[in-house]
Length: 358
Image (tube, rainbow, N blue to C red; front, side):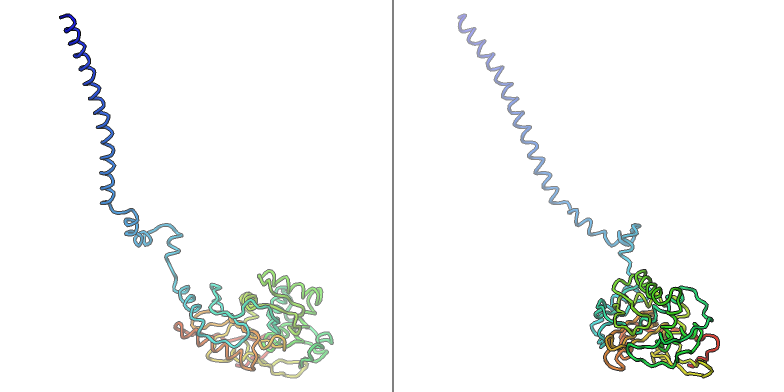
């Protein structure tokens, strides 16, 4: 009987221990199953929610429009001038330029509107005289001071003609006018020879000025352009034209159509080598032509075309009228890509004692 009671007590004890263990095991298993249910619930919610990228795509226009970030605003805004320049650049394939190298640049923004062999280094002939004029004026000389023509100024390289005889005396101002308007070689050489330090100092100043303007592919060996070792590129010459245009006297003298100058008691008529300066269809603000056999016929201009100030560079033209024809083709091309509003031309005043015609 005692044994049966002990056995019963042991059974009761064992049952009391087993039931709590089973409950704890069930609780652990139950706790393990809950996260799994939560994860699946989250997946279902994520599938129903709109993607983050879709939310971002719904706002870009309003964000760009109202953005206070200068970089974003600048990128979003496209000015009509830049849009027009870009359109002309894309449409440049329609422009047939015959010159060996050509460049058309928006003067204000420096944006190239058309280019052909613009980085090709080649002789530039009398386009050189624009640099000659800038170096002369940078020295702030007395423009009324007389300078004489000597044998040193005679062209012994190519035998080019001149009506400025040896011994002739003219003012520095007259010499500058003739060098720019009529591309007078003896006048240009005499200006350089009368520079402080003489011709070597003048040539050094020309090359220093070129480097200062960023004309890295340019070199000058003489002040007239008769030397074929005077070389540059269309890109460099555009920089030179833009710089020369800042000189009022260069603008005036290079665009004077005709002038009568008193040389040794004789009235001599001189004419501009660029016929476009007297054309009513053109508004030319600066001009210079050039020619030697190695360079071909060259022309650089600052002009207002289609109501836009531009720099035009034409190098290595073969035909007699090719450079002028190319300039007119460029003008027509620009006028067909945007509306032209011709600006008012201003009267040109010559140096004291010079009668200007046209």
